[in-house]
Image (cartoon, rainbow, N blue to C red; front, top):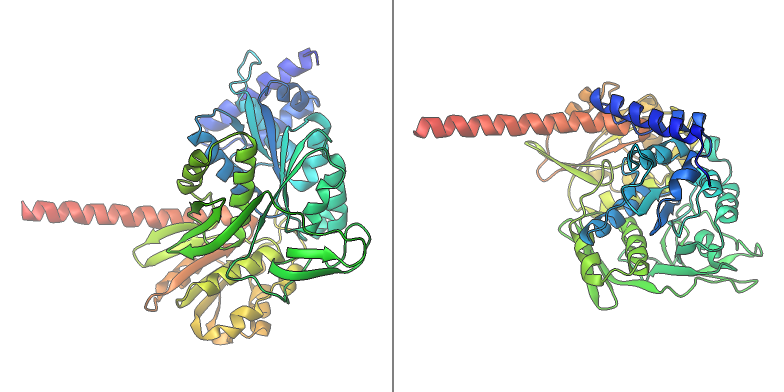
Length: 468
């Protein structure tokens, strides 16, 4: 496509705005793309044509950011240079901004490969302008119904947008995702044999009780979590595809998640068996791109979790794990992970209902907080903060958590002090915020961590001076 004056104006405006934001200490992930798209609605199509080694798209409800960053870690180990919306700005504006950052003033791309996380609702618009060479689809769960609408609509929208020539990397264990491979030119499946949490029956929220093809009931012989498992349709015979990449011998050991694929043992520094699927998605894509297992194994092993994805912080009082919560299935898996930590628990939950969080917070009643109620003896305290702190506390009360252990604190700094102020022997701390509370809480925890380091460094220097 011929580049017009609109393209050059949009590109240069985007780059100038990016520079200005960086100078002022701001991230500048969406504004440059917003202005550039306003000037030239075709700029994403223009920019994407430069990636001769292909464009990798990562989409789905849960795990997009972690999957994309796991694959990025592998690409770096392979010595690849690539464009990447690492900050997680996955709407059209953020994607355009990332492509602009990777493009010089002369319009030439600095890389021939792009790795782009794409919001589910953005996939149709994205694929209208960009033809991804490879698309990873992680899973589908109800998420922000006020924004996305019913899940069936989202699944149908994404499925209908993917170009036939795009190679699909699909979660075989999710029937909503596995159906994408039907009548598609090329699909590669990944899946799990079983995890220590897999069961023959499940009381969890499931998004796919019925066959996406004929509507008959799905029969399961094994559940991993949610609707993920080994399934078969009692009507048309639709069933869980045989995965080309199958994880076996799955277990956790000292904060590491370990699994085996084709006799090779892989490990990642993440908690929670749901993160296994993110690693498998990245591994499958990396193999399809031609990388050797040695490179993939190291890329997964050296991976550092992104902000708010089972991210760990060390304070003098103890260790804190910070992880985003945004929908019932994801929250259920975080609860399962916390329960799996055989220690007393201190929990801080932050719930907002701003646009980015989802205005409708009724989803909290679909989360299985009753699991916390059954393990109440191990729970030392639950601090509730955010705009909907009272709603969260009420939900926990009905789940069986003692009112005496529930603390309301709207100040974020105060909430953290409430969490860390009293310490039980061996207590494990978890902070679970929705989107708009994630980074404010993270900044407070980071500041506490930095202050502790400076204090320890000063004490060490004073000790050395005294000895001298």
